[in-house]
Length: 484
Image (tube, rainbow, N blue to C red; front, side, top):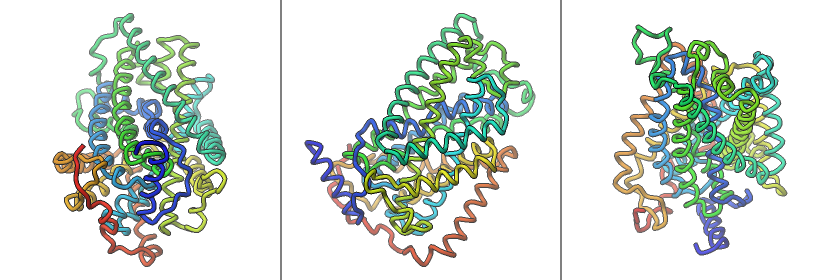
């Protein structure tokens, strides 16, 4: 691959080998794919949405679950790098399971992925409510948060329908605002903490309401912030058919996005906790991070940083809607989605699956109106664990039969231990996010969604989908192995 044309031809050949044709416009390079993943992860969105929950469950001590979850997510990303390099095609986990294991299980993974996306998109949009309330000095009432959520979803739909290039520009710009903004905020808060003489003991402080009790369960529950935030790195793979030299750029984008997000997020949380002036005031606040920022930096500078946070959260939701529409499109073109003839349509001029975008907007509006931010956050943290786990187990069952092409990303002998570690890790994560009483309402929602998916599959899709096509494309991967 010596030039852009060679990359494009190779990308087109990859699509053709899977019996797909190039319909989406290939306009994205490495940074664009990285921007989609980094924006979808969005450490500002995850931390601002869930920092209050961490303080309420155990206190500042809970921030140390964040780097731990980040390590687990990085290991999963490395496994996903192999799959995205073998199949540089839009559809991520749905496609990987369908091609490596079978379309029946692939459909279920696609269904759970779709459920996650229609929950996370309104969850992200609603998280702008408290930030904007702090920014404008108004009360973050449920009605206000709902209005903000619906308005943001509508604007994101308009941008997605208008141009994928414009959406890419916004998400790319948000990488700068989020990374520079969060690093600058980290430095400023660290300086403030040093000047105020904040005790290092803040980093292991425990909320008085849980003192004297076992800290294990509250500590594990606080990991919700990490599991909510440090996922969706595979959204880069949803842009495979729009990315030049996807088999190389997508793996790099996934790893870079999750590693940088883990590092930046951990440093920010440490600085934020160290700069807390009054732990009781922060415990009782409905918007603890905005309170910490404004109490240290003053109203004017604090609001400037909240504007940066607003841009980052908006771009996160935009990236999710972009990625989700491609997932719906990928399933529809395989006739594995409702009204496939409608949702596989791509606008010829813009190269955008507009019907899929509209569907996601409608689902997002419904969840915004009829659910709560807390339930959405918990549900959207657990769902990726389900389809990640199925994807990892499916891949583990067939990897030994795959011989990699010379230019494929290949973990070599490390793949087997990493697969074992990540599968066990996801089982633990599912338990942590499902068993505690406080998470039960979201667990019930997720179980109902899974049961509904099973009913829909057996009632409608089973006869349409061949389930005995394991490794139907395995011949595409039989070539000389070369570990990189």
